[in-house]
Structures are given as C-alpha cells and as structure tokens.
Image (cartoon, rainbow, N blue to C red; front, side):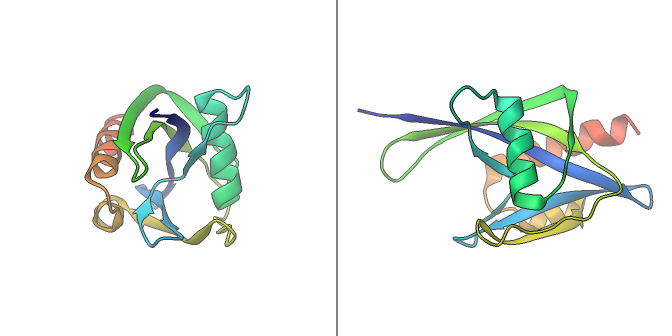
Amino acid sequence: MRKYQDCGGAVLYTTIGHVPHYAVVVESDGHCGLPKGHIEHGETQRAAALREIKEETGITATLREDFSADVAYELPNGDIKRTTYFIATYSGQEVKCNDKELLAVMLLPFEAAISKITHPQIKDVLSHANELILCLK
C-alpha cells in the first residue's frame, strides 16, 4: 500500500547588495535543494517549513503569504513525497549548517543557486519564486 510523506519547505532568501541570495542545502546524499522536512504530528505545512529552516540553517525566517508551490515525486520504495514550498525571508542573521542533517548550506545569487540544485522540479520552484521576489523589489 502506497504511503504519503508530507513535507514543508521554503525558498529561503536574504538580500545582499540589492541582490537576492538563496539558501541551497547540500543533503547527506550529495543532492542540492531547498530547506525542507517532514511535517510533525499536529503541525501545519507552514509551521514545518519554519521549523525546518531553523533546524537546517539556524535562521529564524518569516514566510510570505503570496507564494506556495507543491512538488510530489515517488520514492524508491513506492511511497509518494509531497512538499509544499513557501517563500521565506530574513535579514541580519548568519546561516549555520546543521551538520547532523546536511553537508553544507550555501547562500548564492539566483544563477549560482539554480545551477547547484539537483532536481528539475525544485529548479522550477526557485525560478518562480525568484520571478516574484524580483517583481516585488
């Protein structure tokens, strides 16, 4: 029987010299993506996204209300992982990698960030979020 794993995640960014810089996480398997994680019992997708950002990067972020994107894919065991991504912003904080969960966290401008991300669906999420962020500047 197929199971579903629900997750919350975010396009986490800050502005450096008028240029958005995005947090790209390097997972333990070497894949690069965006901060995300499983929703805990009683938690909303938004709350999970904020908790995962804090756990993975040390950042206390604020989620924007104007964006969400859903990504779903099949895992090797046949289960389906569904992640809802939001846009999260912060300033005046330093990113710290949780080395128990990740190999690294990189803070990169859009072109560098998109080139690092492994999965096409996550590249799409970042591209759409970047368009919105640039329009609202």
